[in-house]
Image 1 (tube, rainbow, N blue to C red):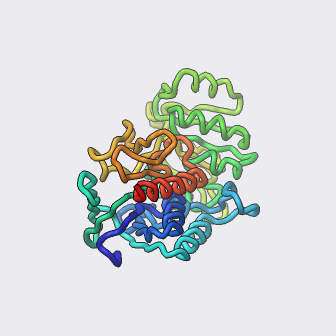
Image 2: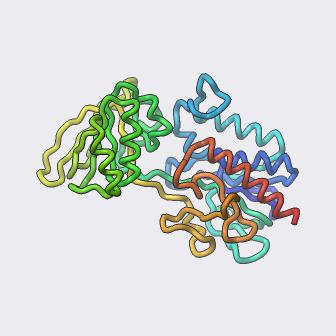
Length: 319
């Protein structure tokens, strides 16, 4: 439970964006409150964000030997706490952003804020298979980010699930590392743009399993993913496909449902911000990280926008 009823800055989310925003806001002596996730039904909704479910992070600057995702988030949190940020764990139930100060309803009660930084992130869409969560937490398993994890699949054969532009981009990128990339799509036609399809089909390292769905992920402790059971939706025939990793490319869902009708969003639910700022359509409300970024979705870009949001909030308050 928060120690006060009112804060000058409340930050929703404790991933790279939220913690960086808290670091800068704390150093500006704004005494921010960070509302972490957790406590809900989703086992992947944990304080620290998606990096808490990541093994090795090799692309965050300053760690030449790499660092475990949970260790990176722990270090970021300790650095933030050093400057006095306050933390509260719980789900945001409601937000009233049309009144001043903003009123937020948490599981444990209500509080108000002069400014709000939304860094609630976005969730990758998954197939819902029981093995997904287990294999997401180790190298050689299941991923939803080829840019983040593709390096670990050098010389392997991998599967990419999806048929849109994202799937084509992921498949093409993975061919820089993997020996073979097989696209698994449930329909006989891809949803990707013609240009993206043409590029992917011209790549000799990309194979295709259309009219197909992944029914089960194969593998075990110490060996990671070894393949998948794939079912043809027309013939109902099930076959085993060898693979050293599986990439889900079926989209992301930004965590913005509680703000529907109050903040301008795009058709996918990502928060819209002004050019060159983190300001949303509501004065005093700022967005940082994947909640407003459907393109890059990297820890380092999230951290950068977290810094921007804290500076934007500080300037808003000073005026």
